[in-house]
Length: 207
Image (cartoon, rainbow, N blue to C red; front, side, top):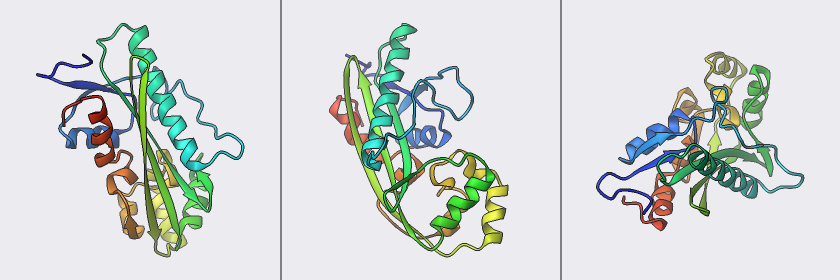
């Protein structure tokens, strides 16, 4: 049994504060796995996209790799066996994978490309336990209104875009850029609640 039914907990293989907030919103108790890497880095996983890799395949592969790495950490450190949950989010624009910006200039370039257009946000969630792994992908369409250069510069100067796929956080100041969203708001944040609950249910984890 991977958890105590009287006090179920899991491990979150992510440093993302947004994912921690969303798990807490679900009422799930968890411990965060830290990989002895710099802040904002999940460690142990090469997130480089492969040649001609489809965005949906890419994001699911990375989420599964993070979950598998998380389980290996549990095993190596001889931690109490529990489900390991990981996730990965990427932005797709016309088939191109757009990850986190390398610097402020890259963040501005990304936001200019997204301005006045519709892009897709793909968040994959994966759960690993004792060699078993299950995953799912949430896909949302997000349309930005036209964003002026001055607004882009102010937003980038706030620092908010720097650790986020697509150079924006919908739950923060960038919410004012969103003209329309079709899909999962929590998925765009980084952890789709509906899909996550269904995935955990496959392992018998209580809602």
